[in-house]
Image (cartoon, rainbow, N blue to C red):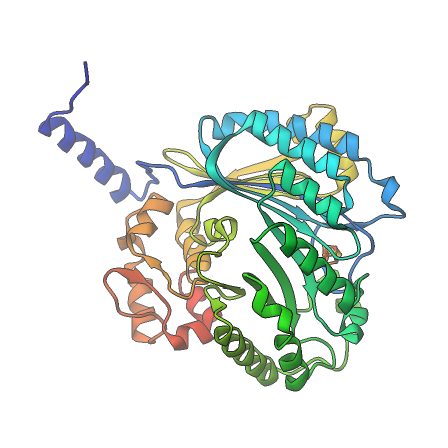
Length: 409
Ligand code: SF4
């Protein structure tokens, strides 16, 4: 017989929810959507601007693929109790350069994922590939294994800029890889960078007017930044565009892509209708994610708290520790209540259309009145739209996003 809850019991539950929240305790009546990230840490060579956990290899045969997959399996098994019974809405195999692995290895990884996790029937499965590391048969094999979205690291269509960026491909490799991928799958992202050494507004416009761009459904457009511990940080190119030029390039990019029906929906993301990235959107809307592999991060919500996990960074040490079945391969911490609102806002404000106000409580487990003071400051500074249904940056807030985000720190 179906168990019913009477009105008094309902009131008790609501009182309890209110008590939990009024004491600033996290309380979720429903857990956020869950994504899965798998990290592959090797590249042919290290690009001078890159601060990702990626390591150059001597030759493609030196990647310990079998050992790595065994370690991934152990870490997946160890992580299962954290997400038991929950549905995965997206899988992302990123790096590094995942396409350096054999297609059969990617197949084994996806088989592991299907064996251990409960995947949503519409699950988005993305793999990152780089020109120069794939051919048509490899991409075809990915699709047969269940990949339904491909992200290609293009960065520029200018051979001189590609050389400065230390990429192993040239313009014609880039175009060929995009066309090959498009002949096999329609959900494709390409990564492009701007603000490159020696790049002027005209160069940027030429890159943006590449006819191939109009055929792509999703573009991630990154402004080159000089990150610590990179070759560019030690030896910074002298001819980087200044802040004004970067801002002009950003405007040109947005306008040019708009004319091709590729609309900006996040700080760095542009897409045609129906092709926004499910995986990245889950990060920006403060969803949960389980990260597997060296250096991978996780954020997992439970009924009354949120945890963060960071895996051992060094790939060899990660393999060794995981293979010894030691749970020391990661470090876990509970997010403090006062850290959660900033983390939510940091992500949500990146979305051009913002988010519904109700999403704050849904994804943080806290009442929105916890940030009333900060919202008031943001309204007064005209950085946030005074809107009772959405949390959305104004045009000014969007341009000075760091200032807006800092209010919630
Ligand atoms: S290919 Fe990508 S991940 Fe690898 S070094 Fe270059 S930027 Fe980093």
